[in-house]
Image 1 (tube, rainbow, N blue to C red):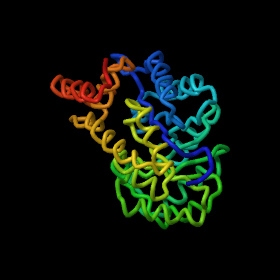
Image 2: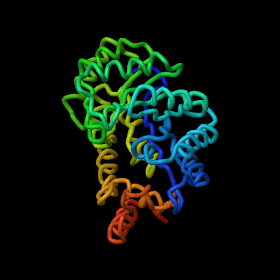
Image 3: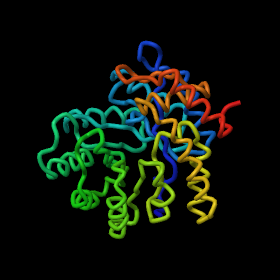
Length: 298
C-alpha cells in the first residue's frame, strides 16, 4: 500500500437535514465527532451518500465549512466538486479550496453522457490543471451512466495533481486492473466504494475503503482496515459482520436505509432529501432489529 495520507477508511458523511430538507448543522457536527471518535482516516463531504447534488448551494457549501471547522485538521477532508460541465466544476473547486478542503473529488459530468472517453480525459485534466489541491477521480457508473475506462485512468495517472480514484463500479476485474496500474505510480491511491470488497481488495493492493456504512459503524470499519493491514485472520470475521450490518441498506431507497439506521443513534433525522423515499415503518423495524442483534443500540 502507498505511504501517503490518502488511505484507510474515509467516510462519505451523511448530510443531516431538517423537515424542510435544509442542512441540520448541529447533527452534522455531532456526526462528524462520531466519525472522528471511531478513528476514520478522512471524511468526504457532498458525496453520493451525502446527497451533495441534492442540497441547495448554500447548504452544500455550509456542510463543507462545518465539517472542516469540526475536524480542525485531524484528518483530511475530501470535497465533492462534481458537476455537469468544466466551467461549473471549476466553480465548485474554487469554493471548496477557499473553504479549506484538503482533497477534491470529481466523478464524470452527468446529464449529458460523454460521447467518447476523450471527453472524460479532457474534463478531469482541466479540473486538475486549475486546482491547487489534489484531485481524486470517482468512478460511479451507477449514477453517472459513464464509466472511466482503464486507458483513460492510465492517461490521467500521468497528471501529477490527480492522486487516486474511488471506484464504485463493483467490478472486481476492473479493480484488479486498477491495482496493476499502480506499478507505474506507487503513490496512486485506490479507494473501494463497495464495503463487501474491502478485505479482498485491500489485501490485493488497494489503499482503503470509502462507503456509507462507516457513518453507522466507523470503529468497526477501522478495525477491519487495521486487521487487513496487519494481515490478521480476524479480518475475515470482521468483513462478514460488516456485510451483515450492511443489510440496513435493503430498503426502497439505500439513502433511506442508512439514514434510518444512523437516526437510531440520534445523529440525524431518518429522512433523505425529497423526492428520495425514507424507510417505511416496516423497514425501520427490520433495521432496528438488525442493529440490536449486533449490539449497536442500547
